[in-house]
Amino acid sequence: MEIQKRIAIEEGIAEGRARGLAEGRAEGRAEGFSAGIEEGESRLAALIAALMEAGRTEDAHRAATDADAREQLQREIGSISA
Picture 1 (cartoon, rainbow, N blue to C red):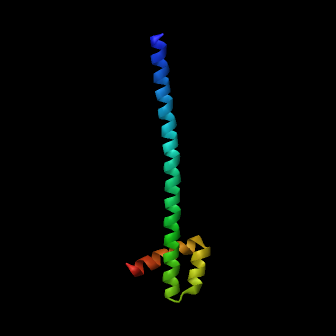
Picture 2: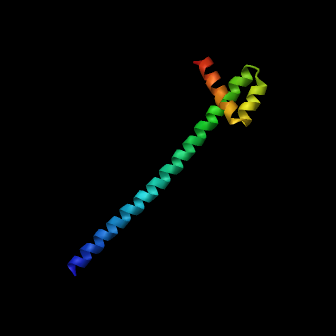
Picture 3: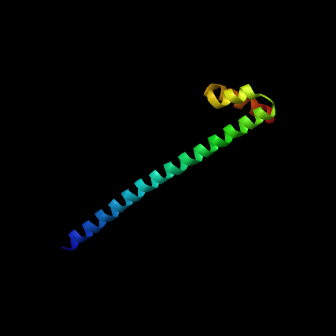
């Protein structure tokens, strides 16, 4: 009986660890996703603000609607402000 008890305890511990790891991974992914969204929004806002300040409204519109243009403008504005 003692051996069965020990095995059950060890199985319970292993199951608890597996659940804890799965929950931790899911929570980490969710936090990372949220942080990525925030960073992307901040970068886009900064880019559009810089373009608007420079009077480049057409480029600001392109940055908001075209991912390739956004990347190009981000590189350009980044090299200007650096």
